[in-house]
Length: 336
Ligand code: KG4
Ligand code: ZN
Image (cartoon, rainbow, N blue to C red; front, side, top):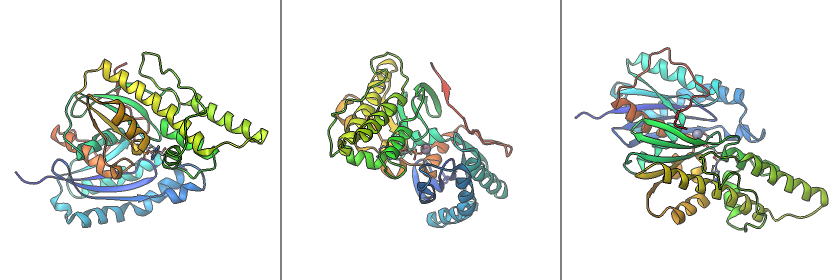
């Protein structure tokens, strides 16, 4: 059998990334140009700034990915690209580049859902067994996804308001931490204790939906009230209390999902899957099931994960025409 090489492109938010995957799961290169320094001073991603940066670096990312992999365009079998969900202007830059490259080199185009990419990053870690349950936690999404077979994704629960990463970043901003604040809060949480007892929304309810806006508001109110009264809050304890509430909610709903849907493994993916506290809780609480978490380098946004999801689509010949458009609100189908 001849080797198969897929070039993948990701530009849905603030990372421009191009990767080359050999066969099923060998990532030969995964170039990631991060724009975080440009967005930090605004405390979040500015869409127009993101699009401009993507335009500036995308061709260099293509060249670097091919060079690092030691691959010529003529060696490739397909081009994969994230077409949603994400920022429309940002998505369009990656899409235009991927389509032009696919057309120029006579290659099929594989459209990939960004969240499927996060999930399928786990394939680099180990072979996946189906059906599986996935907890996807990122800056824009918090969802439980039941995967019945390769490439068949069904949402069984999601957040009604804020995504978990978004809640981390917002409370981080209130405490004066730099964006994105998830990693720093995680580190501070390990030095403090859960003494503020924040609410755990809907934790006892049977459904699989999440809510983080009440937790975020409780945190912000406590912080501002203390400031007005001149009270000193221990930042490590605040972070530990926020993280404990977050993890209690994530674990409770994940366990309910596993009880409801027969699953051969649990995949936990997305930027927040980098959280050390979450990894510790999963190791402690989920003992009778294989838990697969992508390696840290594949947790944040990157094109390697898009290539890993695309390999599954390639087998099914799920190719798109060149009129493929960006879908900023692209979602999996829903089972609830
Ligand atoms: O998946 P991702 O890179 O981008 C999106 O698709 O949204 O996720 C970024 C999010 C940010 O909100 C960031 O604060 C959060 O992931 N994050 C973390 C950690 N590392 C990144 N949250 C909690 N703990 C971490 N260690
Ligand atoms: Zn993401």
